[in-house]
Length: 428
Image 1 (spheres, rainbow, N blue to C red):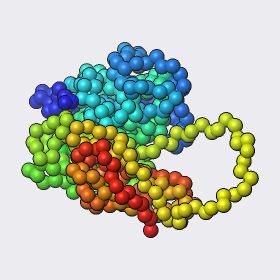
Image 2 (cartoon, rainbow, N blue to C red):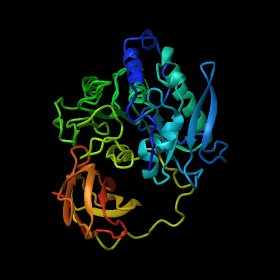
Image 3 (cartoon, rainbow, N blue to C red):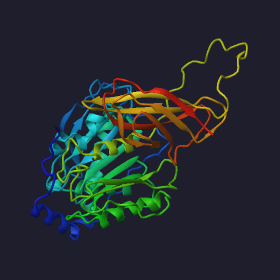
Image 4 (cartoon, rainbow, N blue to C red):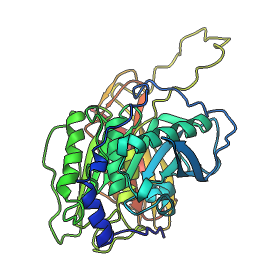
């Protein structure tokens, strides 16, 4: 079971956090934004192909003239030629990098199946005041140190945090929009500043409807920054009623391709680990980690692959004698199990367009094995959760170019050892 030492802050910690919202330490200027290529015009990091010197554990780094520390988690079986996701997890007020590490980086590390490098920086005074941009500079310095030594997919950098850590993740989204691919802010507010804050970044906000430390209105304000930046259609998402012990997740419509905004409101107080049907937070039973991982993992890599070093020596002399078996507008769905755990599993379905005609919408059908039931699904809209299930494209991934593909994923209860049957794909 994952444990977090500060699920609900003490009254003293809450008072400190609320006081920070009006303190002058948060109003200082910020350092210069690090130069970076825009998302989509990226290259492998300098650490790719190198024998690494960084290992999992606590690392020390000089930043802004101070000695700072961070915890690093390198994937098991690290392959120096494989670009990995890079995920920053920022701790809460009076929390620590060790707390984030022991909690599995907000529960994402167990779900990642060794596909990500995880970082938990340590804040000064156990917080993220970001005075004169020092914590943004720390983010830059840690990222550079890691990418000079390890192989990182530069189109797959993410950040998340709860409370003060959420505020720091928001500051990163505002100030480093060409660096960070997506952020998740859990029960956050504008405490660490927002230098810039005018460019799009994929954004997922999570907040309790009766948060007694940082009112949900503060979380909505952060969300709405990226609703505007990402060109989404403004709306007032549904939120659960008091006493319902549920959560409602809303994906905004109209957002720029590749820059979704998602909002999850839950019937609860100031916690990163709400549980549907219970008033007691629990790290191992919360729905947040699964939804955050799904939000992050929906983004396909845009890091280019190396071209062949030599052209084919013997090009075909004759064209294919048989036409493609698929008709224009057809698609192919391929299922795979991503991860399993006792009583549940995570799966992914790739929707491929192997024809010369673009798809405009797709529908996947599949039959789950007995005892399996979908608990949550992303990058698609499902009808049914057990037995025969239909999944249609989301608003942002229905168009699939010729010889391209997209994916959707889900978590489910039951034994993941048996793959679904009758997997089909159609397109109008």
